[in-house]
Image 1: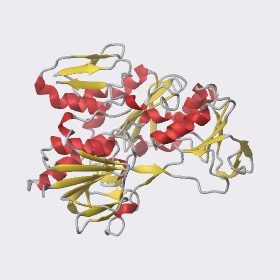
Image 2 (image 1 turned 180 degrees about the vertical axis):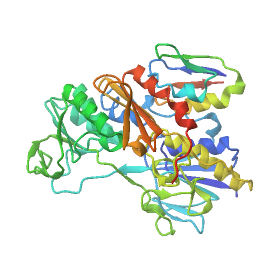
Image 3 (image 1 turned 90 degrees about the vertical axis):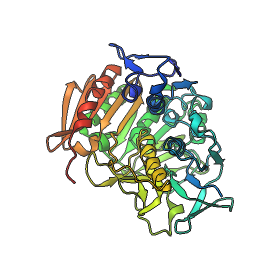
Image 4 (image 1 turned 90 degrees about the horizontal axis):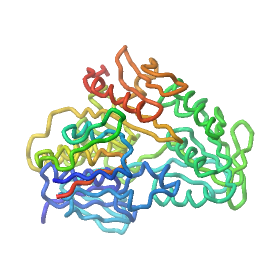
Amino acid sequence: MKVVVDMNKCQDHGQCVFAAPDVFSMDDTGHLLYVSDPDDALRDEVEEAADVCPLQAIRIEG
Amino acid sequence: MTATIVVAGGSMGGLRAAEQLRAAGWTGAVTVVGDEPHMPYNRPPLSKEVLAGKAPFESLAFTPRAAAADVEWRLGTKVVSARLAERTVTLDDGSTLSYDGLVVATGMRPRRLRCPGPLTGRHTVRSLADAQGLRDELTRPDARVVVVGAGFIGCEVAATAVGLGVREVTVVDPLPLPMAGPLGELLGRALLRRHEERGVRFRLGTSVAGFEGEDRVTGVVLGDGGVLPADVVVESVGSVANVEWLAGNDLDLSDGVLTCGRLRVGGRPEVVAVGDVARFPNARYDAVPRRVEHWSIPTDTAKHAAKTLAAHLAGAETDPAPFAPLPTFWSDQHDFRLQSFGAPALGLDDVRVLDGDPSGDVLVGYHTGGLLVGVVALGGQAAAMGAARYRAQLLKQPALTA
């Protein structure tokens, strides 16, 4: 599974961090960090993170 | 015949319901009926980026989950009536669909002002077509804009209009402060000052009595007798649930459609409701059913309702866990953001500053019976993160008594 975040859309709401803390996090300045090739076992939580992104900036490939 | 679930409503709630039915194991047919010609799209940008001309439709459309690729979409048509006892719905093209399961996801439409005067020049912001129509008028040179309603949408539209360079933007509301209904006085004052500093004018404590003009609006007549010249009027005065099609089925439709804690409608195990049309009890707080018009609610309710419905249709036990979503919303206005977790409206009697200062970045806590029930941050990104830090505490909180 590949995760792509459109950083032009992302506004650092952080909802994805609550939904999938193993994949998404915030750095000290409040900006998004993420794992782009998470284990497939995390698919459910990544799909949830994509659902709750207010900017719909998270895409799942494969 | 294959078993079918009909989803009435083709917005975010309809899409999320279809996706969550698949996630809950439903393999039968799913038909979504939506009255707009578009596939579901994200609405928050309508009062901001779309109005500002910064977001084309392609950037708003939701990308459906792959598992929901076989869902049938009937767009540009709507459900006009239902016979729940016979498990059928009728569409405005005259066709009738039989179902095994029904999802009510018809959402809300803007409330309109019923007062004398011309209709042309008066706008609402709910659909893409609304926002595009309003944008064309806001970009007229020297347009004078009056926004009726100082709630979230009204204040966002006013901020966007100022950002577009509109010279005169006035917000009218019968309440004395903007957004004070849901957020209280402390933030209401802070927001009023921020908007005024950025060029928005306010006429608060007065209602709208009518509109001036022959063929189109030229002015807004206020309840206090004053008249505001206006070329463009935006009505953001709340919304009305789209439930008329459910009439005649002995349901409580007094404010949206009443559901139980499993989001079932009218005690029927094969009918559930999702999104802001659903009036449901939130076990996190009390037993009072409420509608919630937050962006997060279609997704939260769809997940729970789909489990309820899929389990019933599979002849399985439904999940006994009570539905207890943590509401969250945000609002971007000018250069600042409001970020909320929990239910501030339940704690308006006991509002405390938790961090910062209302003149700058501020974090406000809402309490009832000494318990924190909601937090709202006003400011930049750091303030929003401050609110998020209280999320775990809000999730742990014991339920309030009804």
